[in-house]
Length: 123
Image (cartoon, rainbow, N blue to C red; front, side):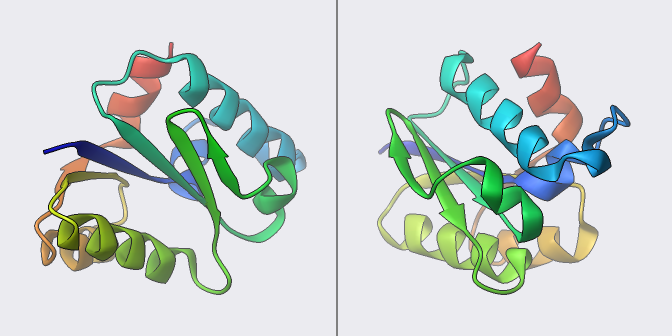
């Protein structure tokens, strides 16, 4: 059974007050680059981006990181990606601090990881 980490890109980027709001696309690109080289204990990382952040990373797969552009609400896309991976028999973890989203993905059997945890793995 493989492990999938679904990342709420907006939530992770927003966890650090480093000026991300001035360049959302650049912040998304930096997060993607960090995910590409980090030794994260998951087989696949799904980075979900929404809004202006989508301009920083093209959708698709780069090695073990797959970037998904939300067509509407990012939370709905995160839930859909979680449901899809769980339905394929993968163990799924979701990185978010959004309490409502937590409940929605836990319904599909996902484990919750905090943005602080992920940022610590990326440092």
